[in-house]
Image 1 (cartoon, rainbow, N blue to C red):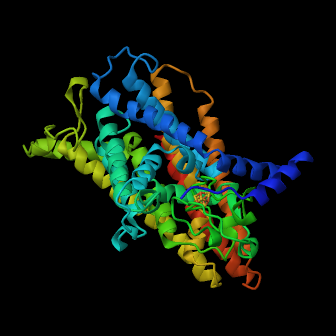
Image 2 (image 1 turned 90 degrees about the vertical axis):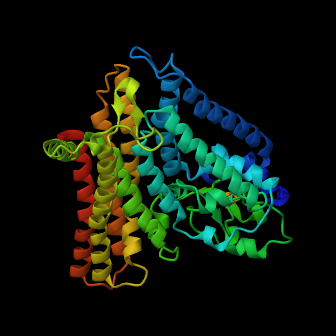
Amino acid sequence: METVFPLRFYASASVASTAAPSSGNRLASIGLWLRRHRQRIALMQWGVALFYGALVVLPAVLPLPSGDAHLWDNLRLFAQFVFWGLWWPGVMLATVSLGRVWCGLFCPEGFLSELASRHGRGKAAPTWLKWRYWPFIAFVTTTIYGQLVSVYQYAEAALLILGGSTLVAVLVGFLYGHDKRVWCRYLCPASGVFAILAKIAPLHYKVDRAAWDHAGAEQPFNCPPLVDVRRMSSASDCHACARCAGQRDAVQLAPRSPFAEILRLDIPARATDAYTLIFGVMGIATAAFQWTVSPWFLNLKMTLATWLVEHESYRLLDTDAPWWLLTHYPEVNDAFTWLDGILVLTYLLGGGVLLGALLLIAPHIAARLMRHPGLDWKRFALTLTPMGAASVILGLTMTTATQLRGEHLLLLWLPHLRVALLGAGVIASLWLAFALIRQAEKVKPLRRGGAFFAMTLPVALMTGVWGLAFFVW
Ligand code: SF4
């Protein structure tokens, strides 16, 4: 069902534009402009899909780069840099600053899935598919699997993971929904992470419920990720596609405080978001970013390998696993042993879950101390969102830095940028915890102080974990 543009809202926006527009009006106009220009956006999405398809498929059929190849003269290295050095960190930064615009306006996977659903079977999504933890499970699985097959380094692995994910997205689109993004809403591995980061975006599509209810006749529009727009209060599920901008004179792209959503107690704090943040983004993803620089990992591997040799047990030291199971590129001396595979799996799962469990203690203590309606452990866990955002951006840009250093670029500014990003995450998370606790005026000061102190501990832990990786190891 395509959009019928709401003339009344457009007229009022046009009138407003004859005077000096406020920043709010300007933003609303951008939302309306995006809604009016669906065809241009679709054209751009085709362009992104073709570029993405070429960068996923072509490098995988080319030979491995020679030692003197560069980003600018070798398609494998270029694609590797675009995907992991620019694209992923860029998408995270865009989501934190603008909301899920990547999903709504650019993502080739969502675009193709929606296209397939327009011409597919149109079946209703089954109940099992709507289980809220699929994106979390998918995120953890792809993060770990990506490390086992070295997805950041090899185009074959990127084709397998990104291409495979796109094929499944198209299949899900073909089977379920009509003109919808069932894949994005219920299954996409990145969806849970985007849902968290969008909570602190300073832009969102704001819904005026009263205006919605008092508007005249229903104007048809399509929300592909199946959001109940009338009741929408969180930016988590909204793909910022602008298709509801101006709807019933009640929806507009608007600025907000990046802390507003987490501090508003009438917006539910979901357990899925809290677990994805704590165990996914801050736990397992952090372990995945850091295992290659961890001396703990190296020492454990050397100790176990020595023990195996001493006991003449060589099976786990073989490198005969296929490339789609464990990294296997003997032509460049890069092949995982079975021991490597087991240790990577153990370090990521064990280390990530341990880190997540430690991070989770404080939100439970803070909630216990506060004993206040709405201030449960999930709400306190979500105050760590800025720290999680900083962590995932720091982790992803490690790949960017490695790639640029490979081109002999001196990145003297990098430590300062890292400290600034980490500092911003620390300050914003502590401020969120403080502002949340401040809302409960009737709770005794000692309890409030205790809750705040508890919430400084996970922030300190994450700062320590990243400090180790950047400045000690
Ligand atoms: S609520 Fe739906 S239609 Fe509106 S901007 Fe978000 S994703 Fe698009």
